[in-house]
Amino acid sequence: MEQQILIASEGYKKLDDYFTENDIKKVLLVCGNSLSALKLGEYFENLENHLGIQVVKFKEFQPNPRYESVVKGVKVFRQNHCDAIVAVGGGSAMDVAKCIKLYSNMEPDENYLRQEIIPNDIKFLAVPTTAGTGSETTRYAVIYYNGEKQSVTHESCIPTTVLMDATALKTLPDYQRKVTMLDALCHAVESYWSVNSTEESRGYSQKAIEMVMKNSVSYLANDEQGNANMLLAANIAGKAINITQTTAGHAMSYKLTSLYGIAHGHAVALCIAKLWPYMYTNIEKCIDPRGTEYLKGIFGEISIAMGCKNVEEAIEIFNKMLREYGLYRDFEAKQEDYQVLSQSVNPVRLKNNPIELDLEAIDNLYHQILAS
Image (cartoon, rainbow, N blue to C red):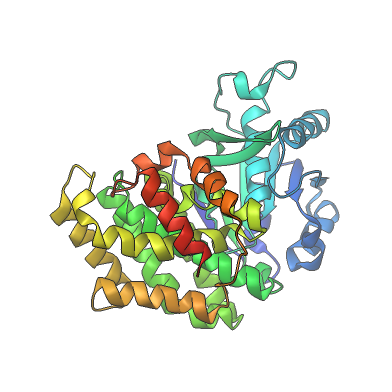
């Protein structure tokens, strides 16, 4: 089913229409504490008086959400007899809400992760408050069980409707603004060169890259139109990733985030900055069945989408963005860090990468990343 995109307007008339047209009586609102600082927060505070719709808030989750939080959320959804889910936030809120939707009609006395997912038609609206993850348009969610990352994947967890609210980005801290934008750009770039790319996914990638590059200045200046356009760019990049999945850039980024306490988009961008030139200069290691000439063409198309004359210029522009945003730093890496990092890379994600990477190459890339 095609995802419905709503553009927020003064008074949130489109939201009013969404709730009344779908005859929604009680909403589970999955959100963080930051909602109270947004215009949208006031809307939900007044929703019962305004439309007679009850709002049950669920905030009992944290970044890198745990399975136990999802279990609590499912319980709250059921006990309150909610008939719709709304997620407002970044990737964590989206992941929790997606899993609540998936698990809401499953057996509560058994581990949800071990049960077969049965699709349901619960109404699910997402409101992204960062222009980066594109989580609102993908079939993926990540939660942690006993400290181990669990990737949950099912088409049924994709929100049926998305509200694009540019005002939600107004209070975004400068660092988060930069790294979430880079996450969207990296999604589009990785999807473009993925061995799983299709004509449709490449169309999404091209559009997303063009939009990020065109709107980066106004978005970083916190301009309302720049915010609106970047939200859309992240959404389109998410559509590309939903088809192809991510590649080595993301596979190499996760442990950097936990080891050095940096944001996900920051870690991914650092990886792409070193991975991209390595792949371009090692084109003979291509494992995409479409061949080296095809891959050379893809690198060229990515460069054009970025507004560059050639691949070298595109790589330099990308690195220049990281330098100007202050994302290169001394990580004070210990020798044992490199082994931990190399062992953390998910080999499944590497199969999506168009250039073969062995342990030596990965180790060398990590040395470059941490020496930046």
